[in-house]
Amino acid sequence: MMTLNKDYNRQELEAIFKTTRIDVIKNKLTRQGYKFETSGRGQGLMLTITELPQRFKSFCIDKLNFEPQTDFNKLKAFFSVALFDDRFIQLPFSEMERQLSKEIGVSRQTISKWLNHLDKQGLISISKNIYNYFLIEKKDGVNKAKEIPREEYAAAWKSYWKNKDEYGAEAAFRLVQADANGVPYKKGQVGYNAFRLDILTELLEIIIEEEEIK
Image (cartoon, rainbow, N blue to C red):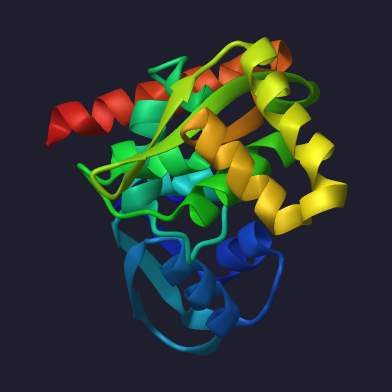
């Protein structure tokens, strides 16, 4: 983390960024959201940080390894719901997309990508053998998900396997939809890694802090 209004000489910059190329250093600072001014040339170059990046963006890049090209406004809006609502993070991606559409437009594919990224970073775990079960119904042209018991999910798909060989996969699936009044869906339960709670706690604090500053 660079310091606001601090003057960095060339030697300091090379030590921090581990490169002698000033263009690489400038590009990295710009990608991270810093604003700066330079003076002097060659070995006498000085760089002054004039504006710090949003703390949330810096944290996501430095600690969570998100790409600098990420839409951090949308990511923060997602985290503001997902990390404060234990039930939300368990929902199907399509339902997350629907609920978030009231505030931001973000696709289920992007949501899935973000959660899988957190899983790879070891902050959460997405179970591959413990599931939540849902029925995705279309009402007024909008897909909505409601939680259902495992038995109801299993019964719906039982008819699919029963009819698949006789009627074909597509027809058997339509029968499932008709009988269940929707699409039975399961999603691996999401849990938080107790050994990385310090990172998650810091992330929550940053979100709260930046919301209070607005």
